Amino acid sequence: MPGYIEKRGEDSYRLVVSSGYGTGGKRKKYTKTIKVNGKTEPERKKKCEKELAKFIAKIESNSFIEPSKLTLKEFTEKWLKDYAEKNLAPKTIFRYKQMLDSRIFPALGHIKITKLKPINFIEFYNNLTEDGIREDGKSGGLSPQTIRHHHRLLHTILEHAVKWQMLSSNPTDNVDPPKVKKVEASFYDEDEVKKLIAALELIDKKNFKYKVAILLTLSSGLRLGELAGLKWDNVNFEKQTISIVQSNQYLPKIGTFTKDPKNNTSIRTLYIPENVINLLSKYKSEQKKIELACGDKWIDSGFIFTQWNGKPMYPGTPSKWFSKFLRKNNLKPITFHQLRHTSASLLINENINIREISKRLGHSNTSTTLNIYSHALKSADKDAADKLNTIIFSNDSINNKD
Image (cartoon, rainbow, N blue to C red):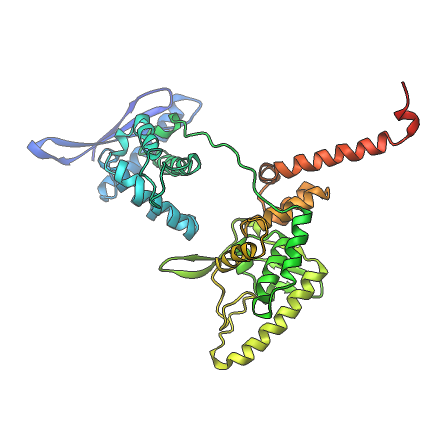
């Protein structure tokens, strides 16, 4: 099978292979543009020859797909199968498929990836801002943040097309998604936390597990999935610690399932306040009573937070209960996840080292913590200035000096 190399640019080359005959008896040509690095031209040529050999082998085995014939939808389906399903979390894939099926494929799916231009994406993003685009029936278009999510997904997909040498460049690189105004995360201050705890003291025995879930989250900064994924084996009552080693999530058609934590730094062991450890101990005893009452209907899943029969609790249940609880007690509305923000903000205001807070939250780096909790850091900085004012200028002789 004949093949040759054409130089296209400083480090760009085109591989050309002839194989078989097309319509009208014309010899079929397959082409592929690649980029190679090398200090000298002979070095680059040697690399090209290796790529040419691989290219010929692919064509001979009928595994080569011509990029010029692939639509965005066809390439994305290949990307989902060959990359996403092997590397991404099920919930992430589910969210991506929602965006693809509802908006991206209908608007752009039919266009061949080699024909995609920045203007296609500019027009698409503009369309997402128009009235009537929302699936919930509400007026107005999608938020800038949601449009950015679409942009990031498209950029990621087409970046793989570049890596797999099916595109020479990513057309979304030249498109600016809408700017998003940073919104400070809502959280409770110390007084609001006290009101929350006072209200929790009044809940009945039936809802005791929610009290434990809220106070454990408040004192640990756990993500909701991490909370739902906790098992009794993860609690060390003697050392007063919990170990986060997994997370529970829910998806339609799959149900509740257990997965690895968000990232490697999410696997961690945390010290828990003594009062919360005591609550966990009391809750374990209460759960044992429920187990005995259920008899053979009880399913020993080992999870801390369960349904009535021992099956793991649906991860969204504490969140729904929490919202109703706040409304009933006239407390400031925040989401269950914002208990995590509250936990971090309280620690920041107590001048706990940001590295320790980052580790406690399971962030991959401190920059994530600094970015999310900039509002609390500003507040802590103001408190620090006030304290310095007291320390430095507390002497009356200084204050009265001309």
